[in-house]
Image (tube, rainbow, N blue to C red):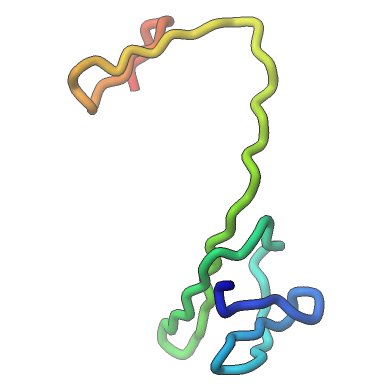
Length: 84
């Protein structure tokens, strides 16, 4: 358990030890809440959620690509010669 639970369709958050707090979500939460951090900036309070979601599979590709990491961690070269 994380000590945090969404209530009332995401309009309230239950913070164990504090109580139920009204919130305005920036966007819908996906996945399972792993941690939540309460933060204050000036007169405003924020809750930062970290969630765990299942990875989405990549679409199948007909083309193969090779990646050479080399010995320098700052260089990455693809089989098409692109450097990143």
